Each structure stands twice: as C-alpha cells, then as structure tokens.
Image (cartoon, rainbow, N blue to C red; front, side):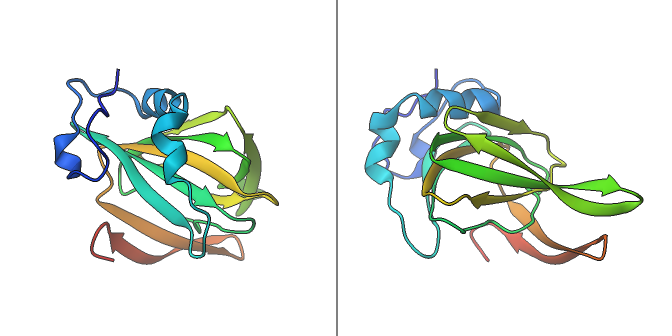
Length: 166
C-alpha cells in the first residue's frame, strides 16, 4: 500500500513508501481513493497539476484538464510511468511509422483506464470535449522532459526542460 497519510501541504520528502511499486499500481491505488484527490480538483487555464504523493523513487501527480488542453508531444526524461483517468476522457497521441513516415496515432482513454508506459515513451495527452481528471505516476520521479514537434513525418526535439527549473 502507498503511504500517503501525511498532509499534502507538508514537504514531499515526508511522504514515503518502503518499496518501489510499479507506476500503474500507484495510479490505480490513488484513483481508488477519491477522498485524497477530489478536494484538489481545480479546472483552470493554464492546466492545473498538483503533486499528490511521493515515495522512495517515485512521485504521483493529479492533473485537471479543460476541453482542448494538451501536454504537447514530450518524453519523460527516462522515467517510466502510468496514468489513470478518473473523470472524463483523455486522448493519447503516439508517433508511429506509417509508409516510412512518422504520424500521430490517437487512442482514447476513459474513466477507469490505466495506461502504463516505459522509460522511452513519447506522447501527447489531451482533453476531449469534456473536462477530465487524471492521476500520473513516474518512477524514478521526473527530473527532465524533452518536447518535440512532428512535421512532414520528421520528429524534432525542440526544448529540454529540467523539472523545477523550467
């Protein structure tokens, strides 16, 4: 079980877990505890995100989405992760090779779905036509992300961001 007994206002280093669970297990457990995350739901521009829990070697975030909000195409700096949709629906677009070119292929994730991904995963996540709430976990905790563009079948890294600095 994930230890999130400490108030969220305390420093994240005070919320710990003795073992490193898989990100998909973290988001599934947290999704099943609406008393923990529902009070933190706030829809706004820009997109709202709040660190929900952290443990030894992982962290979890609550994200809220208004229709049309998107992450942009990005990676997770070598961290594996997962997300669970707890309200609404999210579209996830992945670059795939089609006829020798990269194109985006989109899948819809609805309430109750858990989407795990590996450390080399690249995607764009966006809200559908209704507000959405999701829980995301990363192991190890995010330190950096690279943002990309996909144009004319070519993937280009645009900017490297250091978490907490950019």
